[in-house]
Length: 395
Image (cartoon, rainbow, N blue to C red; front, top):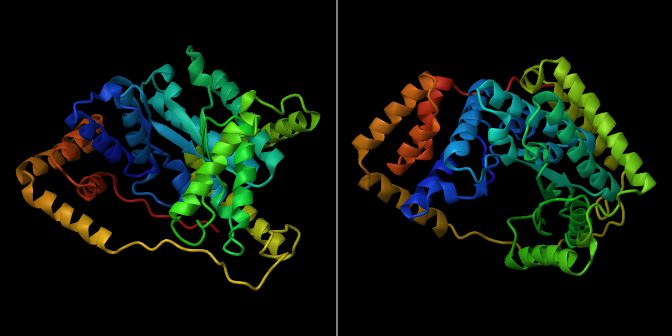
């Protein structure tokens, strides 16, 4: 579930629905993105300040290690860092630095590293430079294993694994000549598979224009299936391993990413770096240089600054029926009118008290959602205690 600030609530809702259907929480599998640090860095969709946000995340680690052991408690996301305009090296470095910050926060909260680290996963972007992207994924596994071993000395070898999902680059797709996006997505998906991704999302050709149509989604899915079943590239682990160029490029990606990670360590860790605006400024600068290269035609984007046609996109776009929204509002009103309001108030009071103290928040959130307390009500209660983060503005 691609959710961050309210991730604890969505997880609780998922567990509550499972239990209502007779499925115990120990049987539940899935993933929440739950990566708040990259929100401060890149995506800008946060609720609380960094420290209480990190507390919620470590509460999720602790709760799931005991009650939902098959759940991937966080998907540490470089995807949105790249979408914000970072380079491949910055995506790699800032993502892994975020991951190390989460592990550090978990151990400082009293958790054994092997209690939660095996359930960490990552989420990377797949951009257009085939070899650079493959090298990025190879370097990610190297860096993560080395840094986890050196910093936290885990005993479980699974704590060293960099398990990751990949999504093709939405920011690389163009409104001009959208059919070309099928080719872009194919190359990006190929890089992800050859780089060893565990799972894959291929974007639809019309993503830059609207939510995808059924036809566009089917083409995106078939792209994955052709790569998986017809190309042969998934038949061997690390198919480009041993290539002089690939090994040299992987070494270079690792070296440059470690320069960033060491700089972040010097600043006092990722939260301190975010507070000074360091990763934000680096991404802003990289984004500016990327756009300037396009405008000066130092970087060619087919159909945008070269090989241009005047024809408008001849492509069907999805239209959402407003009736969907009306029905959902009606359902929500029905739930709120029929629930036990006294029980809701009791749950919110318990949550407020836990937030003011040191109790794990997850059991209180779970009690709340079982009483049909809304996301907005839970968030509002936590805001009373934690406050709301305001972007300091980084220029």
